[in-house]
Length: 112
Length: 118
Image 1 (cartoon, each protein chain N blue to C red):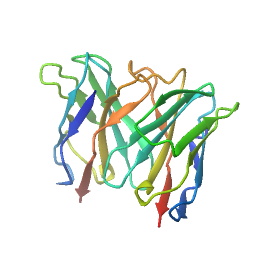
Image 2 (cartoon, rainbow over the protein chains, first blue to last red):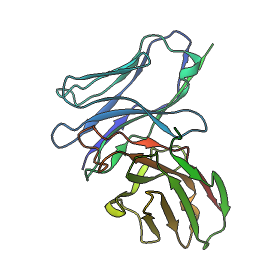
Image 3 (cartoon, chains in turn cyan, orange):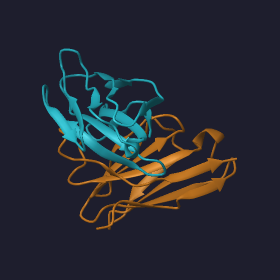
Image 4 (cartoon, chains in turn purple, brown):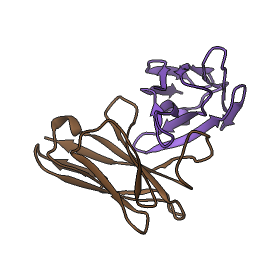
């Protein structure tokens, strides 16, 4: 079935540093890909998505490009802020059409 | 507009007990999904309902059950609780049938119900 492998955390960065969180996937065909973010004490929020190969999803300064050649969907941000401290999850549709399969999450801590 | 609301936010049960968790979707959303998030892991799919019908079920034992009401709210029931059921239970709602494969139906999650089983 479909699965994602996410970079293990935790990741600690200084404010204004460059962020990359790696995500690779295994899937049949070319499913939509997602990044969700979970701030402390909150539920998951959709950060960005890409629905086909070579698409770039972007939101709040974060970007991820759907690379079918490398089966990857790495999350990047040029300059992180303390407010970006959260857990980030890569996801794709699971075995059925109605479920998402999530990675284990990468905890990001940004220090001033 | 209110987002996805879940209740209770926290609860403590003992092994063998039963628990009911509740979820109200965003107004206009007809699909509700349930996920279990164990500490340090990503959410795992439990159920998805659309128009009161079960559309999908994850790899969970029969102790887990759910239903959706005419107003599209939902309940998740877990019987005979085990220590391993301790987790954050997340509810998500979406428009339409809830199919996520195309990316058109975005899941909006609630803050979750944190269950501790002692």
